Image 1: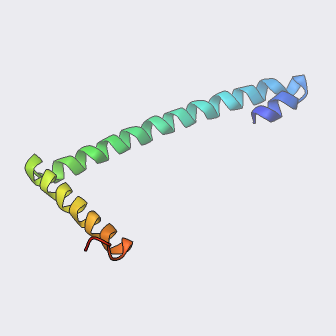
Image 2 (image 1 turned 90 degrees about the vertical axis):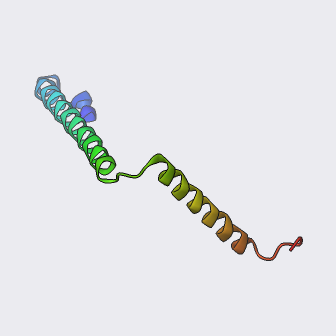
Length: 81
């Protein structure tokens, strides 16, 4: 729309500018709403998952250990083993 405004005859630029302003405002409002939705969803996930910090660390450690094991398997037999 901005390109259309820039090349439009002068008499048509005013309405195009108003349309651009309105669409920009609506887009920003939509983005603000989306960000709020994501924040609320994150809070809901945290509230619904009462995992203690120690459990979270153990889970992360187990996942890293599994990843390391999988990477060793994918790299093939080692010359040290």
